[in-house]
Length: 259
Image (cartoon, rainbow, N blue to C red; front, side, top):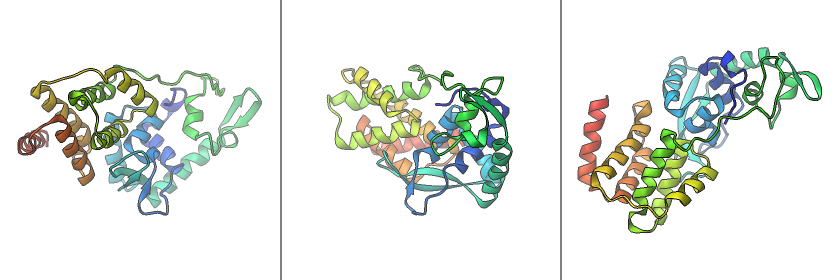
């Protein structure tokens, strides 16, 4: 994740434009990148994922960003990925030109942000590691993984349910991969969480329904459930042992309440 540094000099919308400029739409109509998902974007711009949908809606309303559903490596289901429109590209390019001339210092001497940033170092990464004196400090602390974050807590709950029968099936593994990607949890942290909860059990039907609704709330953050997200939710319901008619009714009631 990004540190804080000079990111605060820019609005979240500006950061999203700068980030997506560095991750343009692939020629393939089917492939997307993690960096283009909500999890990837929120991680790059330095905000919690739950706060990102409102920003993306605003950018789409301004015709600066567009959204498509594509396959992303590491996910069994297709994901919503975001790209800049031609207007968005123009706006981002203008900002980057201004940023490129910003003078910064490094341990090797004076330079500009544009000269220092490159293929392996993004503009936002450099900004997030600039001190108040505009010195690039690679040792500046990144935002640390927090075991008590809502996303991690929710993933733990899903894991508890998946382990109820003492094993995780191939379908459940695919569902867990999709949910961890949707929540923006890094693979190393997923392994750590899974090793900690693999022997725990949760049996309450009320808790199982509550877990389903928490995942539903994450999927509903942009006020829309795509076919792929519904497939993920259906897989979760089966893993939790929830009756399909019952959970469909629960989901409909929840959506009506939150619309």
